[in-house]
Length: 100
Image (tube, rainbow, N blue to C red; front, side, top):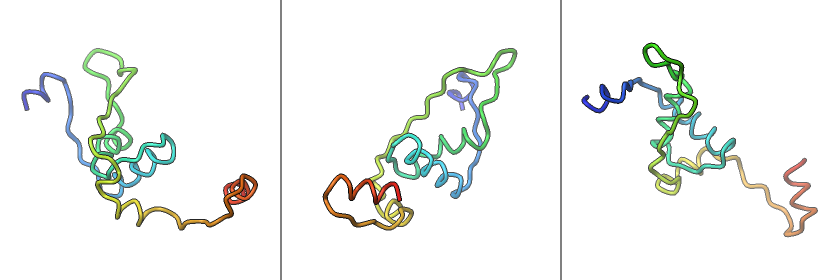
């Protein structure tokens, strides 16, 4: 509580679905493969926004620390990923698989 008060921070809840949405967003938009628990801070930021501190503007930069790699929970990654698309090991075949 002392750190929360000193940093003028805030605590807010997010749902499991919001965490999984943040998990997918980090993977698709940022290329970050984290475990779902690590996406909780990002989920909170997306769900609740960033309030301006008393008497001042909202910060321009925010840091969310992701402490766990996605391989800590491979079952979630496998369960949420689309099916694998097979193709020949040729550039043209990969382009067709990705772009079609």
